[in-house]
Amino acid sequence: MSTEVRDDNPYSRLMALKRMGVVQNYENIRKFTVLIVGVGGIGSVVAEMLTRCGIGKLILYDYDRVELANMNRMFYLPTHEGLAKVEAAKISLININPDVEIETHNENICTIENYEKFNQRILNGSLTGGRVDLVLSCVDNYAARMTINKSCNNLNQLWFESGVSENAMSGHIQQLIPGELACFACAPPLVVANDGDENEIKRDGVCAASLPTTMGIIAGFLSQTVLKFLLQFGEVSPFLGYNAFSDFFPKYPLTPNPDCTDKKCKELQQYYNDHPEERRLKEEKKVEEKASAHDDNEWGISIEGGEDEQAPQQETFVEVKKEQSLADLMSSMKKLQTKQ
Ligand SMILES: [Zn+2]
Image 1 (tube, rainbow, N blue to C red):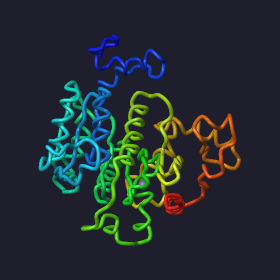
Image 2: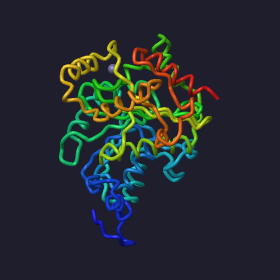
Image 3: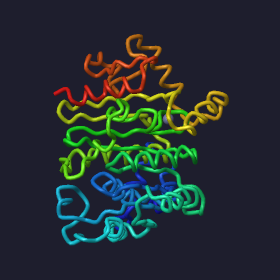
Image 4: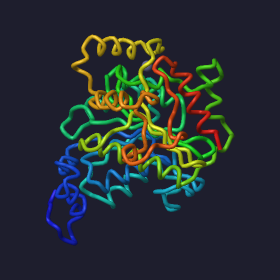
């Protein structure tokens, strides 16, 4: 990756981040492999952003085809109609940056056969034939999220989850470190936590709303977080929410649920309790230090860059107590999202 400032160097603006002291080793981006499950409204935009940033390799999973109903979102073109999403994505991404290796799987990871193969791609899919550096969930249904959750817990694989609400007015990204942060089964959606029908989460025949704006914002958050995580600059938020009605961006850590229904999650929680020196969550100490400075805000939630200059406004705080259950916490989040 050349650092030369020339009009014909596609990486000169990116390498400027290094000269300006933002990132120490931007060229390392070429070594990383990211596996993305779901290349719809969020995943396709994340794939494009990472491709433009010069990521080493992308592994894309999806089993949908491009439809004209997808054209209200970014990335796909009317000429892609009828193509498998991963194939259409590969054509566009290679045109954008031929340096990036693109591996595609037009498969549903939820079937038994594909699930085993999916696990193998996580373990052996990197540029050097080893484990991928990150798994991203950009799917639109509960079953696929639970499948990714199961894989990542079993393989102790760090991953990020993302989503946009059915009315397109809120979204989130969430970091999941097995045993250290809440997994997807630790904090199930409210309807599941309340013994409701999980199929209600995505109802057949019900057309959910979607906006390129909300999806682009969440895709931007997720891509930025991937860069920060891989290239080790800035802070990686464990959870970052977005409410479009009120421009509200809550962020807070989600601790794992000791009563999680995923056996491997509980095993890893025990392991990292017994071996705290092996924890990967580097920001934990920092969060605790911040928390002690704010008696009324023990999770250290603050406005970025604003805490020393002005008192944060009351509505920027999420009232999260350490003893509060995750279901309660998600309930608080839900109320915030619906508060208009
Ligand atoms: Zn769990």
